[in-house]
Image 1 (spheres, rainbow, N blue to C red):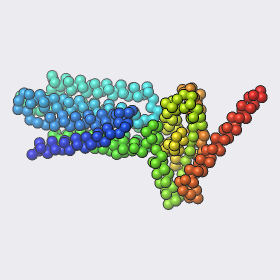
Image 2 (cartoon, helix red, strand yellow):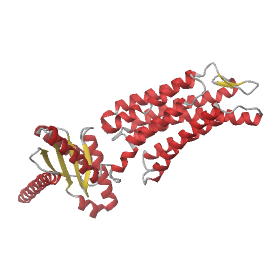
Image 3 (tube, rainbow, N blue to C red):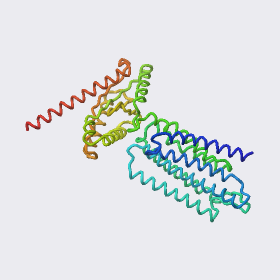
Image 4 (cartoon, one colour):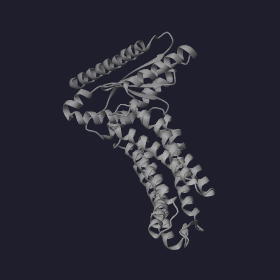
Length: 387
């Protein structure tokens, strides 16, 4: 009866993971960028559960023993492989991650994974981690905790890495990424003390559901090309802020940004390069604005940044930061063209009206900024010709 309950528990978790994998694979971007690593983690966990089921049987013959032992070896290997795969996923969620830092952390984690693999392979000859007696009964070896300690070290390094990159991770995602390893860690701790239940893999199943709900499922709110929130989500977010303002008096502000020379980029360099310009623009905006600020694609080459602050000096400072960052980008000549924004800001008050009135106010200020820049450009060119 106990063995049947154990298998039923594993199969239930496999069904949950399989459903998440099915939903994830249906998405267009399931194999793009970091999203593929979440799908890989789901597949690894499913196979690990299958290996755990195989290892739970009692072997009466040599060939049955080979299946049971193979399940044990496979489960340990896949459990440890989940950690570097999670690191790959985390790196994809960090905007503007330093490539050298990424490589250093990945080198450390993969090296520690290699140690786990060596420990597992060595136990085949030494029985240090686990072994089977003459009756094919499983026993923990004297160094059973060794791979557990190595995996714990890997998890702690990734946690420190996430904390160090906090400013580059969206606020809504940060806590989820930080807590992802908590459930498997608790499972590994329980499994080291209580023999006979797949606590670690149950923890992985729970963590996968949390990530799917808080991160992966939110991707349907994102613009597919740029990764900014789409127009529908932007409108919903601003309406929510307006309702809070009218109810609690919590003022907020927003910026409407338009790429001045976007048509010229498309005409001169092609639409693919135009798409790259949009992606680059959103990437720079993420690095510039605060983690709690909301970036949405208003339409075409226009974007909207919603700020929590309603102080004019904070709004002006944020506009200056954005202009300064894109000026640095132009000076670095990382692209054959300059990305220049016209920016219109507005502070929402209950007297502003509805969302359309708020957009109109930002749009009006944006075109004032665009005309001012055009007049300055004309004066500069006129003065240059006079010289």
